[in-house]
Amino acid sequence: MLCQTLKVRRFSSMLASFNVGIWKIGLFIAISFLVIFFPNVSPASTSGKPFSMPFAGPPSYTTWHVSQMYGNTKIAHMQRNTVYDEGQGLHFGIDFSAECGEPVLAIGDGTVFSIDGPWGAWPHNVVIYHGNDLYSVYGHLRVRSSHLAIGQAVVAGDVVGLNGDWQDPENCTVSPHLHLEIRTDSMRRAVNPVDYIDANWDDSTLGISGHLFEIDVSNLGRWQSIYDQPSIRFGGPILNNYYKRWIE
Ligand SMILES: [Zn+2]
Image: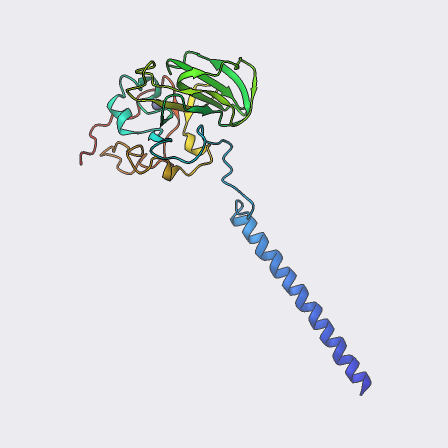
């Protein structure tokens, strides 16, 4: 009787360890499946975007908001052969509307690459190199920080200058805004800052108009989202000479 009880206990213990083994194998297969098919899933992961916003605090009517997105905007389309012709007819940065004098912040760590260089963003501009062939360009600054020098190290959040109004730098009565670009390919190509700056972009326009894109009748769905915009090669052909644009 004792022997039989022992046998039963041994059998139960084998069954228990077998169950633990099955459970472990099952867990291993499940994790392997997740890693293979969903490599970016991680409870601790963030957006993975390296940069932050050039203004402090959340967007609002009285602080800052995006007034023109990057890419195939209606504004750029209207001026594709004049203001935006060097950038293939598209808006090669993001415009942030803000009061003159609002501090403009470095979006990431790096070194000062250029001060008031030939980047067309009058009256003052600053370029920071972040490594990995990525540059940020801060244009239409009213005042650039006097302590900046080429080659100097900066960290994210450092003040690079004060926001300005390039059309009325003295009185700021026309359109005070920061023009922010992210460039690559040794400054020869602009990319969509939305892909590089960790932010709530959907709220950044306050629902006003900065998200409006021109529609090409022969290619209706193309470049209609803030997340779907082409990179821009400076000096390349105009990309938005549409045969016919959508008229609502
Ligand atoms: Zn702009």
